Amino acid sequence: MRVDPSAVIERLRALDQRSGGRRVAWSAVWSGERPRLANDLAALPGVGVETDAAGNLWATLRGRRPETLVLGSHLDCVPDGGWLDGCLGVMVAAELLATAAHAGSPPCTLAVVDWADEEGSRFGHSLLGSSAAAGLLTSRDLAGLVDHEGIPIAAVLAEHGVNLQTVNDAGARLTWVGAYLELHIEQGPVLEAQGRSCAAVKGCGGARRMRLTFSGEAGHAGTVPMEHRRDPVRAAAEFIATALRRARDDGGLATVGELQARPGTPTAIATACHATLDVRHADVGALDRLEAAAVETAHAAAHDTGTTLGIEPLWSIDPIAFDSGLVADAIRHTDGRPALTSGALHDAAALARVGIPTAMVFVASRAGISHSRAEDTSDAALHTAITAFVALASSTMQRLEAGRLARSPG
Ligand code: GLV
Ligand code: MN
Ligand code: MN
View 1 (cartoon, rainbow, N blue to C red):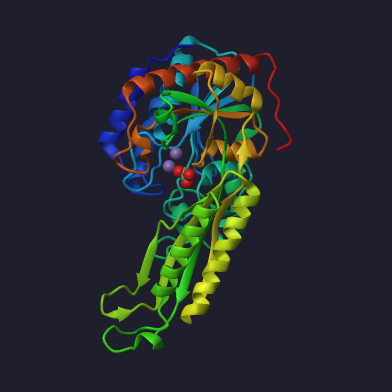
View 2: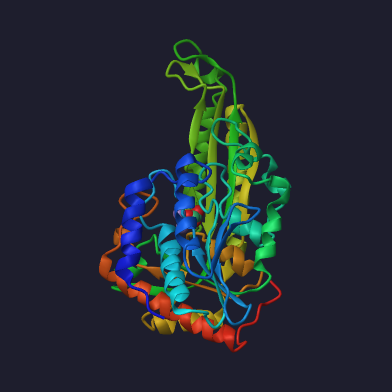
């Protein structure tokens, strides 16, 4: 199968012009963009388009066998995100489906998916749609989540036709899924430093994410002596400085991506300070230790400052390895050099968790920058990576046709 990489890049540039950096999941811009993709795919011969119970958008082309190769990623982005994170994987899949649909019935069934809310930007829970499809969510995991304004997730998802009680019904779509492949930008500096355009990915590291609220006592900035204050901002500052240093010393990553003092005025000691903490590590034991150390640090900071602490878990996923056979194929179709482990999370991790043979291809990121408007990749690297990914998809279809891919128990 052949796909013109320039056509994929054209789709991406047009998408960026229309809605770049603004497609935060469950926003009007995001939901306004998806019907365009749906209509485009529904117009292809033999392709059926549906949205599942978790809001994932599927386009399916029935093949000679029911075993299905799924290709996908996500159209949603972080606020002010770049032109490639997520949509690269969707647009290459869309272009590949278009090629296959015009060529007639493929050897196995081919599906494209645009997963809903990969980024977790609004509610803090990443991989939402793919986790629901994989049966990894319970509505209880989600029920307590609220956005910045305190709006509950159930109300927002309902506006988009998603019922929190039935999100896992999305799993019905995975019955015949024989393999999942995703093309994504690396979002880090490794490939560029190694002089490589693209590479196979052998798995994803794990993450633990929580929201912490330090609560103290309001007071006038000009009158309350420092030693009498119960200042939640001081508690958060002590917590952040220590937790981030500990993560660095232990070889992990820790990020406080959101921080808010309430009510938030220069002349008053805050009553509350909210912070999110995201910790990452490729080793599950080290990840658990990092999380435990962060929680201990937060309690110590609250104690030191006379504040109280509330911790709400937002999301958690263990590190996961991809399918060794598909990773070997991906190495062969890219540059033959060692595969990378992804520090960023991807929908592929949710599918791999439940035993679906999964692999990814990364294309190099300029200066390793991502989750930023400055995110970029050269057209030359995109051409190389798209060609490698299409070759991997073709060889995976042949494997599925020959019954040479098996799901593991997950
Ligand atoms: C996804 O972008 C993640 O790694 O959080
Ligand atoms: Mn992504
Ligand atoms: Mn992202």
